[in-house]
Length: 246
Image (cartoon, rainbow, N blue to C red; front, top):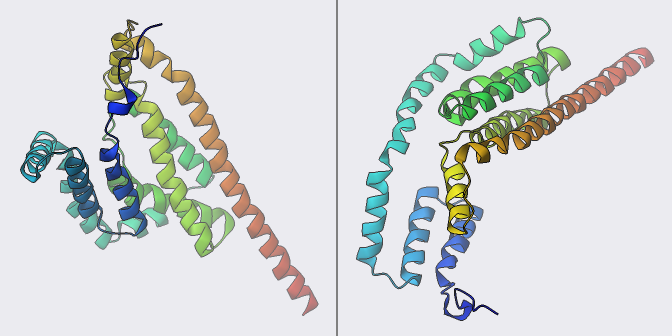
């Protein structure tokens, strides 16, 4: 019987306390940047690193990944567009389209987001630059045009569904892109265990999962709109009944 490669008794689990710090900080609704930095220090100190070594690691990570902060440059532009009525103009435009429904709109966005992510174009879309100023207002407008004024709860659920649609499209679409980090990570894991796989084969096996995700989320979108439609129908029936009694 072969000996285990790693003695479990020698593994230091204390650095995992940083994960608990992140969960606790987010649960208390503290500043996310402060929570992440504090969790990094907690993890580093638990791993017996000095404060200077932790700072060195954080500094290297920031300088090497600073290109990820480029999306911040879009935020002032989006803010100016919203200030000058982008949301209102979008809602007014979508309200004039005949045959438009929230389900059709979000399913089309899901398909496009998933397709572009599969081609590696993950930055075409996203919460700050697409969902908040465009997709969410358009979804609200189509729902209200079709079913009347939304309740506060329904409005929040529509916005959440718009954000979730972007997440699903991105997550399951990028797994099909052969140069995506997760695909290469899977390849490296199998290679370390003596199994050689081409990234293309791994990406192709992500297609069935992406199709299932598309179908399931499309059904969830349809179910939400159906719930709104049923509520609107009940309200209309109650108003007609009250009017008849009067």
